Image (cartoon, rainbow, N blue to C red; front, side):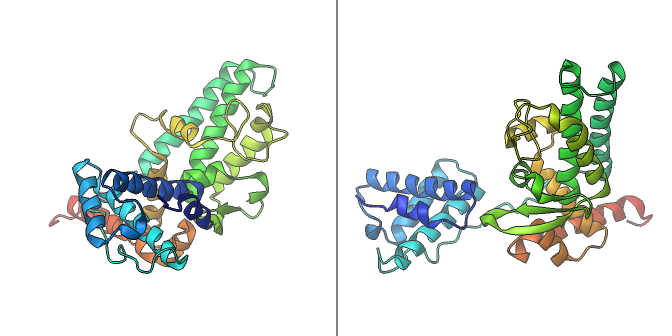
Length: 307
């Protein structure tokens, strides 16, 4: 049985690691389903077979958005097989699955974000007032203050520049230009973009780098901006744990959603927001116009005497 899985994986050079892994896993799952059905080679699959596989996924209670992603993986895989001359035609070419519910992303209010940032600031101030305010790598309490300063910089940057959590974790010191208030971001598909930094972000990052980052083990040999308690690159799970400090349920991507929506609320041009977010398609960015319109209508109904 030949599915060319490793060759397919190697062809995904323009994708991030997470995207490449998702494509590979989706096709590997398809090949296992085919093996159970007696289908030994992708050339034996036709449109009806793929439809049956999609139906099978539905019976497994996968979310509609997950099924839509798997269908996209299958289309890409068969398109690659055709280009590579492994098969003659693409049986998945016209198989598109709607992502479904059309549910809009959750967005935090500006008050919620200000409350969270204030919580982080109070946290670091509390540690500093309990102990000597000067940070010293030999003092255990200094590490607690340093972690609080790091967490504040992380949240300011996620909201202030709308970065994906993976983009934030991958930032290196040379990507920052704090004097110009800009950061170079490596987005999906290794695409670069320049994103402005908010004034609070610049101040928080400067404080973290100048007074706290050096307290972490391996800080002198690491080029990553943000480090975990062990002195290694901050991971996505570490960021989620930072957000768990807030009483309301917050996920990293909610800060990105909030960044985009608040820009549009303030009158920003949609294409500018698209560029800041690093979206390839304007259609992806347009979801935030729906959120902004809903918020506008909600405000109108609450505040206008005839709303």
